[in-house]
Image 1 (tube, helix red, strand yellow):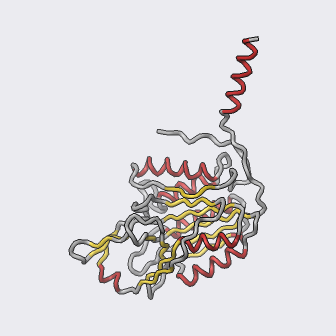
Image 2 (cartoon, helix red, strand yellow):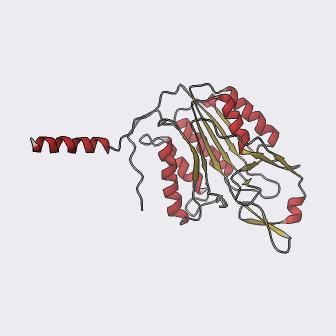
Image 3 (cartoon, one colour):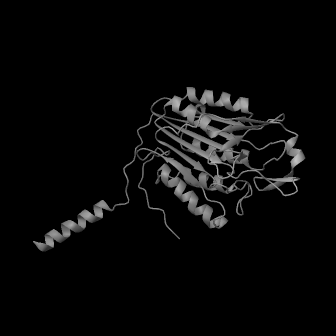
Amino acid sequence: MKVVLFLFLGFFIVACSSKNVASDNSFTKRVALVIGNESYPYQALDNPINDAKGIVEVLLRLEFKRENIIFATDVSATKFYSLLEEFQKKIDHETIAFIYFSGHANTLHSNSTNSFLIMVDPKEEASVSIHKIYEVLEKAGAKHNIICIDACRDYKEKSKDDTIVNRGGRIIHVEEEKALPRKIYDNNHSNPPISTIVSFAASINQIARDKGTIDKNHSPYARYLIRHLDDPKIPVSEVFNRVRVDLRKELHGTQRNMETGALEGNPWLNPKRGDMPVTAAF
């Protein structure tokens, strides 16, 4: 009797500690907005368009319908607002909404958590609060929202002699930056909608690298997001864990993706369901 009881308890423990996680994959539609901004007049970047194209290729492999992927490059603030409106119209209550932005961003204040995405405009430096995205997604009412921001989260620091400024890890002359008037599009600070995860390529006060040490054609964050996003064996939440491990290996902890919010259930972007192995520590 004791042997039978022991075997039963052993079976129960193994079953409860199983690595398999039930998936929530009952969505009917997936919609994406993918933006790569690189041709900034004061400080051009090298890879956001490559990164955005790579993300689009992954989404197509994941069987996103092409008409449900909005792809744009070097977007002005006016165009960005227009794209958000178009994006919102494609979403219903059974949709997974996916957003990827690659380009410059700034927190504007030391230790602030409010990221301002910088748009491309030859006449001004236009910064749009991430809360505008939250506002649009709240109105759209998708089942799940996934937001990936491949941009810096540092703030502008002037040098002691006030002649140069650190922007995203690159040094430029203050007068060059001052040549462009600045316009800030702020929004009411609302929380992200229910079942929303926001993945930032860098933690607060960190710089997101435009080029990696392994792949010069993609940012490190984009490289690993592209690698793991279409893995049929892992859900979305595990994708970002895998990205974090790979970033740490390549960049030795100098850049660490950080997620806020949470998804309800266990959604997959990949239509093929699978088991979720636990992320290996090292």
